[in-house]
Image (cartoon, rainbow, N blue to C red; front, side):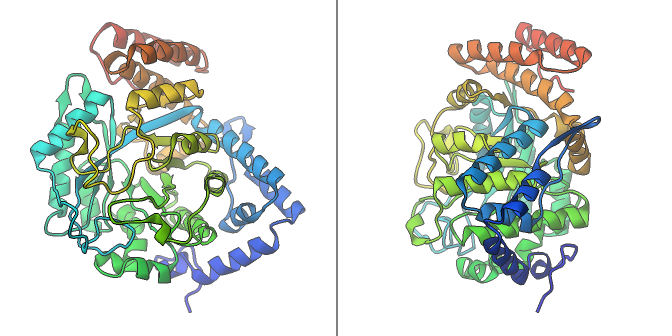
Length: 482
């Protein structure tokens, strides 16, 4: 039997079933152990130091105890600490992005995804490079600067060369004042050589959802196709880092398996990356199973309610304090509002989950990967964020200034990232207001910018940011960054 070892490169050792089961047993036995819980909460709390904020994070076992605790007053304290951590390291900025679906051709048999190979009535589509260009222009016309490209796994229709061509096309499109400045990539597990090619193409984060860390469930949910190989899939992030990609994004599809098991596995995966590579995940996403073409979420009996979902996000924030957390338009406005209060730092806006969906006037449904619950325009999402006390950020500066991987994390851990990110967020917001915003959003946005400029601690940085924003308003000069 495999033994738990976070430094191992073998999936069954760093995501160890026996360790997870012992963790869940321990968490259940101690879920009302108040002295222990108090010590865990105290450990999780952010602390101000001479060098900035410091946060210890939690082990998978400590975090699992908090998740198991069913005392309402403890849950409220978890939420409060999660918000404190998020504000300490990310401030009130919320990064915006959109998914771009390139192709729904897929050779896998995943039972929760409508792109599975046996689905014969879904139209199969793959964007040409001209269609990619048209999609990018449509996204730029909304105001997006950051994309996450998505494609099914199909070595014939979607080889790595096709993905690389699409990335090149995306970066080449300069429409009016629009540019896509960061392309994140969410494609199937691949080889070290292919990850090197993605790195050379200038991608931002490589994203791959585990779907489930429970191996037996994983094999049943992925009965056919290359994704059936649990070990190859689970070890993908190590190959990505070996290939030079130092920003990787984790996630599970909550609802496929029991959520406490998935939560423990997710935190263990983050611990493994830290132990082996010296840097944890750049992002963690928290999607839930949603309705799609021939997929009924009621088929899966591990669905979680909104309150449990919110608590999972808060506990992730306590366990992995420096990691960006993402919630997509799979969730409603109401759920996303809750999630923003417990540590989420990135949201998608105006997403279309169909291939070629952005160039259509009405949202097409026939090639959607999942139902979009939050169907507001990007302008409505931007205004909502501002009215909720957040700064909508289109910033991509850290990636383009080389602040990735351990360099980003070291800045984040000392709080110094705020001296870059806060003014960068305001400058990219000013770009959005000038080029894309409705009159109402523009008025509200400049009120936010004026208020938030005063919060920049360094006077010199504050004045440069103010001058740059004045130039954005007075001319077509764009892309200022610290």
